[in-house]
Length: 421
Image (cartoon, one colour):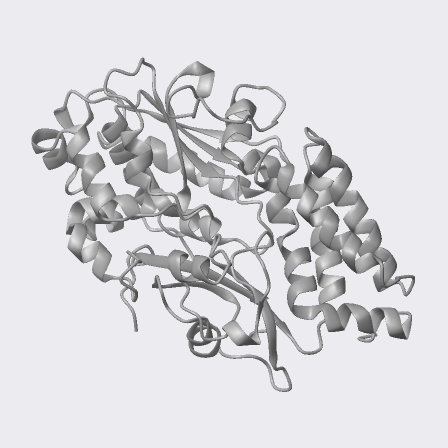
């Protein structure tokens, strides 16, 4: 049994109360931080802890904080991205419904580090239950003196509001989310300048995923070496919440050391695969990552280890497929989602995704031709010229389908239809 850090107060049927969070050490080091640590010291502490963003990109959190200059203008903003519209990903919702004060404290610490004047949680509209809980718990934290003017008698002040998203997957992209908060159309913006310099309403803004911010209080409370020791690999640090779905006996969220092997996640924690099912592939980090075939079944689930073999850990949302699953149909399903969710801002994404969707649809329907395969490869390359990371992520399943499962695609061509039907 591995240490439960983010899930230490998780209950089967309710959220943890403020008293329960405090009893587990929550908010216990805030007063000392305000008295004894400068904002720059807190930033360097998180940098030394090697906390990487848990929203998919894996960018060092401390480096992002240090990018806000000490003489940067005010007001400054700390934003929590709780949009979570990546298919297969549901860890942030589980975290919010387990221990909301962990997120609130993480936002306070991150806000202090960059000297933010305002905190905002951007949450998807479908998470209304979580949004109402956050509204309530923020008010409870405010009454307890953890938010508002002069927190715990210090000179630092911060308040947090909850903003409901108007919808669309693209709102999870950093610059698109900032525009959405400003009431504008959620199109991505190509940096520079970066949001840490010119962000929300033209002011310095740091934006983090829920899981990333939930890690922060534990680093402050237990130290750098403790946090780094939680991982199984020397390049990793901390735990990771893995969302496991698909062909497993116990789908759900599991907090495990960063660097745990894929085989262990599936067989030991997710209860293995159903009788008669054999592992064929998985998407390791949500719908915008590449298929991991059998040859990677024992891979270490760590940002660096995945990168070395040309894959991404992403959000850690593992969607498992067995030998009975048609991956052409699965990829078509994902492509239909991405084609619908494209913001339409740039030509490669707007035109390329419906083009790929059409080709995959014709292959699945038995109307495919051999030349469709190089056409898919060529169009996938074009999508890497898009304005933001949406399109490259959207074609990751397509590219890996051709790389690892071209025989299955050709079987559709030979049989003039899906061989799995």
